[in-house]
Length: 82
Length: 379
Image (tube, rainbow over all chains, first blue to last red; front, side, top):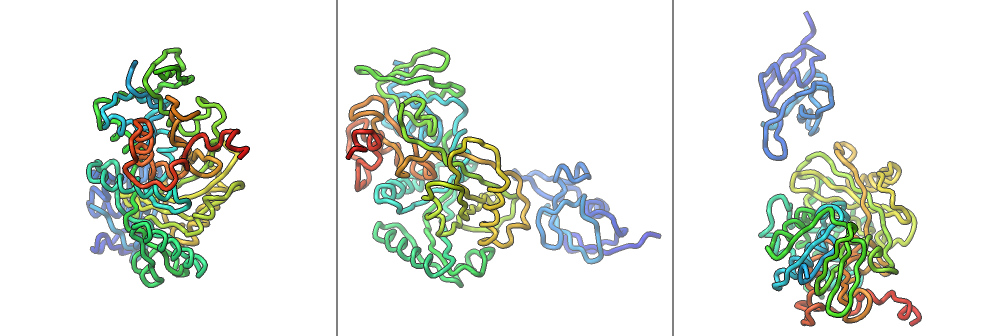
């Protein structure tokens, strides 16, 4: 069985496989919109390969981190803007 | 006649002139070779800032800022008008002295300004380097998204007709008329022609001493609260007057979206619009000195533009070639075109109609286009 790590998404803990991406962890949690566009529309991961920048979330206090290009590690804090 | 007045150039200065003329009951034909607000108007920061470099420019900027503050509440959200204030940052005692001198000059002219000490600077702008000693806060300075504001001004009256993609080949005046010949050969006549096409003005009026000063800007993703005022280094004032070479000065603006707009650079002798990585790097290194965390922000775009500068740094506002000319100039505003656009329009229209100016101007000849003519140069 794969090693698991615990991340915090919007204040709630979630166990995910180590080396899952942040975008995957957010999908496991079932969150569908992770940020708001300038005009207030919901946005979420789209391309999954670091190109579209739609998956931006705040990771460990750093804004605009690409969720699809960031790996989960124990204790990682993920904040979405819903 | 196609209109009472033809305005060549639909940037912020041309738009302001058109709106002022229309507000005085005249019909106005605005021609722009590209789109509205697509030149220096779109390239700049849209900082509405009072500076006291010379008495005339100080008076124009102060009066013009008042006009912007009065207009602000009417503007739309997309015009992004915000009275965020300007915070001039002092790095050492010498710059603090310069800030105090500015404060005193501003106070004497009734412009709100107050010194900010080191603790207050940290409090009001936590992202600014703790090595900075304080600064000067100009409460009533503002920002605006100038290309949108230019469109708003042009839509302010049904007496304004706008033609975009409409290049002008030449202008002339004879008798009671002024005339514009378009690139496609079409001719339009009016009582007056206002030339407000910035760096392209010398194509229409031979011999105008306008020089391009290239500038770079960069904008980040949205990081609300990174800076709260438009923050500049006091050294900006020195840098802005360099006559040659490449210089950079720290200047950062909080966009209403939370983005940070970062400048500034100055280069001479180039019309190449390419972003130059070495200049951008110098500019960002300078910005990092003032905002040490800026390297952690994502930039989303960088671009360049060209300021239209005159030899003495003051704009050309008035009859183009001789007193009483039907060709008029409103160009060469360098980095202050957005700030001084509304005041420029008042100044131009007052001259055109032979009316007194609605605000104090210590030297009515400071912006006279003929000040660079050869007969004046002989002194």
